[in-house]
Image (cartoon, rainbow, N blue to C red):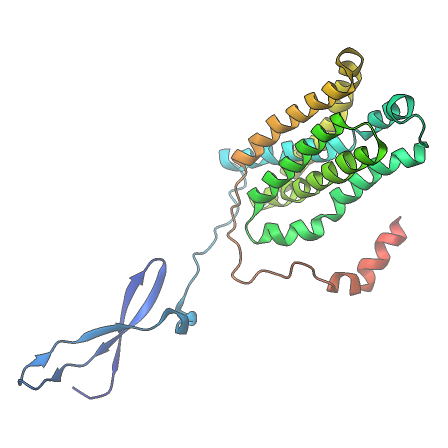
Length: 277
């Protein structure tokens, strides 16, 4: 055989990656015998072109697993927008009881800041979701939401309520909001509108049920335990989301930057929202 190395079309399995094998020709050794062909696998880092990712199929657009994601996302909406929109009944209570010495404009900052965090935190939670940490976002959001409500039940001063209900609950809602929107779109194509509509309805239903719970229970068991009941409901329902929600699309090899400043450099992106408002 020629003294040159001959590449054969054989491959060698290494997990999910197929590596080309270099087959060395037979050669004569000192005792007159010959060595058999030897196979040498090339280093993995030099064969990036041969690495193939497992293709992702189209969205199932239905089925038990897909609609289970809708249920999980529905509960995320229920406890993000639902709890934030419940602040109206809390403000009415604060103005007449707990914070009656404060101006209504001061009290409204608690709910306003929480709603601001719920929407704006998607700037950070979006790239985290893209990296495959959907469940981590939901777990963290569940913790901040429940912990914030529990601390709210113990608060008696304005700054305590602002930190607990405004900052902590707002952080929890911000971490829960984006997965509730993004996860459903990966499981549906033609039925995506229906699935997203059902998911978003969770926020409206939560905005109706939580204020009713507060108004009915607060005169009977007091502010502290009413808030704890809401926290326990949130913990129970969010635990369901933690268990059933699962990302279908694996994270990309090269994730986008955590903060993309090109968005604020786009004139239409900045001008159009201000015109609409």
